[in-house]
Length: 156
Image (cartoon, rainbow, N blue to C red; front, side, top):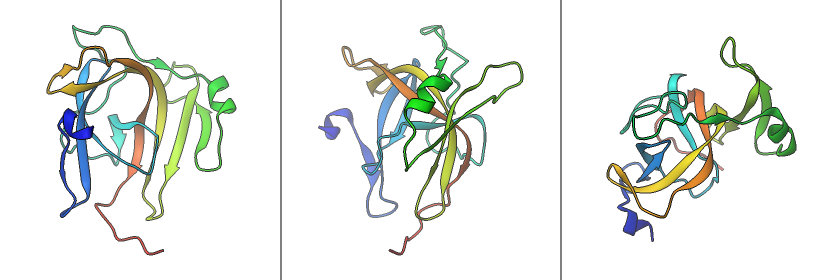
């Protein structure tokens, strides 16, 4: 099914596969990760995020096609969905803003990220156009801090 959405990548070189998606009215090349259900994008102003194939996610800045801002996820949701694998907390990330749900994700190779959660729209895309009938609300992690060394061998 992924081939229908035009996945691309090379398991020979880096083991990274991407699919085009529309989040908040903008197209992103989303890396597929079969070991995680989290959806996170490098956000505008992220410390440690590198730009690979798309622009940074900016939940507060919208295009002329989608003027609705993403909605920050509140602390109630954060407290109700805590787990052993994800560290949730509520923080004020910008002066003058309310507290919102954030989470930290760490991996075996000591890479990881911190992200603020937002409610936004999601659709698989064909280039710069969302595939009709496939748009749905989704929770997106806007990464504000990251540590990703390019592919590293993990010893188990």
